[in-house]
Image (cartoon, rainbow, N blue to C red):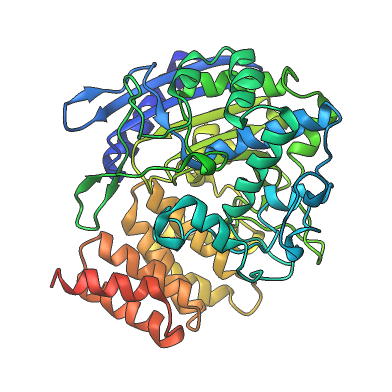
Length: 466
């Protein structure tokens, strides 16, 4: 990579951090199985003014699941299991409704298992006590028919930990450390362990979140040990880059098992499902980004960290931040655009034919003309509410709220009965400090979806700001 690229990427990230109020960030880029760029920006610890260093470990939250997926496939390579196995083949005394679930369904969040979390962060049911929570979750009904939808679920990863413990003959933490971290030479990740911020981890970045008033608060969160196949690790971007190289070079899994690791689960209707229009599938602990150009696999955590591997392009990009909600998954493609210019948002990357045409018109005539331009196209064009919403959030991610606002206004105009369109518009008005307009849009969400808890919560916060 040229030094010009390096300077441009640095400038892009520093500007993005300023706009999104991200205290600290680490970057690593792999091209052709070589680390071609690393970066450490901002503060890892605001309270003490500590700068991010290349050796600063960041809590990676649910990115831990990617390591769990690799562990399962390593056991498969040893002949000890198959992802298609029913879990009752490996675990005894399970509730009857759980016995026919497969390991793949647990890994890909399509099992329908009841949730062991109570909906407040990572708090367990049964008043937060691990053993009572485990006993109680086994008495709860299934949430939906297995393999009919994707729903993020931590219960399955606790079961996966039990399977790894049993079949490897050692705690899953030890298995992952010995068979992955030591093999790849990840000493900082190894030393950090699986205790998130509960343990004393040297130089660890402190995680922060926005309290809704433009102020960052320190996140206080602990994961129970039996929960740590789902979350708990800390790592550096450089060591995660080494991990990506090891996977691509088949040092942890051979080609057959790597392919299965990154193959998304198909629901009963034949479709894939995932977190968003971008991460539109879920494989074995890894998300998939299925598209015609530059397909990728990803592992993210805490809405603050992402590893994205582009196998066909021999490219991997790792971004770690210490702010929840920074969502690097939505700007890593933009970094990839420094290598593949067609992937830049400014060039209309990823848009459908009709939205791409409208987007080009907006760039020429101004984003404030979006509705007028769409109206001229409307009789012959097809627009999707989710795609327009994703385009808007690309501009939110890049700190261009004025343009995002016009895109969300367009979405409400085209889809006046869609609650999520009003939610996004309300969120953007709030970010711009236009509290009255934000309130109007969240009230519209409740008209369409009276039980929408997010809208209720946002209205409570916004009314305190009047």
